[in-house]
Length: 50
Image (cartoon, rainbow, N blue to C red):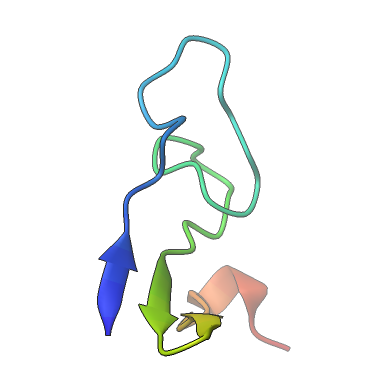
């Protein structure tokens, strides 16, 4: 697997709920290339578990 670097990381105003690492309530997803697919492995923090 090859990690995909987020091109928007660090840009002013970037606050994506899914993938911004600086969003305090976001899920902080990271993405990887695996062959022809893009995958994300996410482990929910306690506040996102049901």
